[in-house]
Length: 122
Image (cartoon, one colour):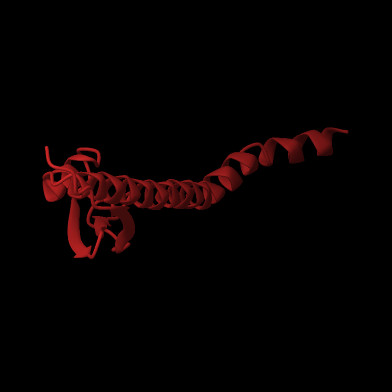
C-alpha cells in the first residue's frame, strides 16, 4: 500500500504537463476557426458593398463612394462599375484580414451585383 502512494506522488504533475503540451494545438485550432470567420465576414461585406454600389449606380448616384462606405470601418472595399445596356454591374473587392496582422495573405473576396438602370428623370 505504501508503494502505491509513493508512485502517485511522483505522477502528480503529469496531467499538467500533458495539458501544456496540448495547449498549442488547441490555440492553433481556435485561431483557424477565427480566421475562417474573418474570411466569411469579408465575403459578406464584399456582397454588401457590391449591392450598395449597384443600387447607387442604378439611380445615377456615387457608386464608388457608396460601395466603399458600405463596408465596416476595418475593411477596405474597391469597386468596379460596368454599364451594359439597361443594366449596371458592380464588382467589389475586399481584402481578407489575418488573425495575426502581418502573418499570412488570405487574398481577396470578390462579389458582383447587377441591377437595372433607372431611366426616370429626377
